[in-house]
Length: 339
Image (cartoon, rainbow, N blue to C red; front, top):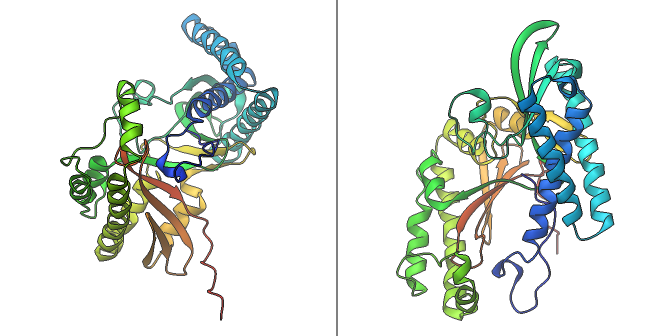
């Protein structure tokens, strides 16, 4: 999924203590971008000639919804931007299929919107978090040979979050023995919430907003973020190198069951196994961490920034607590200025 817009500016509280006022527009733009990319691939590949009525009916519905997506955007400039990014992403992925995977556009038979999962396409259940394919193509030939193959793409109009993981799932899948849920539980109690997160139900929204302005809740939330980040870093640092690598691959979505490209709105499309972050993690001889407030930054043995995890409530303080993984800059930290 993509992360296009920044939050609208608020003056009452710091930005991350507010709900994303622009989240509805984000969703509209994400939908328009994904569907537009899929339609361009369909229209510019042999899938356009697919004789299956059920497949073509699905494309017709997708095309109608895409028109609604575009019409729902708040300005002509945003519509133009999304259409351009969709076209560039589609062509970038089609070119990568040919160059990196031996799949010609004339051999593509289907294009699917798989933002809800790929199970139905591949015929088995896989972990959705590790298979972030927003689209999948089916093809009949690869490297000149007849096959029944599939491949996919994770679409990013701009560089955004790699993973959004609820705290319980994060601990279960971390592979390094974290207990961030336990740390958060303590701070939830300190906030007077009896160890339970604030409800994210729409019907509770007025009460949630009022509670999230309370100093006790904000202070406990800030303290919780700092302690959780420190706990995460310390646990990671104590783990073995192979476990550290698997942890980073997991939070950065670098170990799929079915191959995919990381495709961006600028037209770049890179196979996940060839991505700079995957290569850096594979080659790392050791890792180090740095905690900056609620964010854990990970560096390889050369000091290159591999990734980061932000610990926060996606619905504001103490609501929908998550660990959000993001790709790093792959650059070494700036040297401190000498006084």
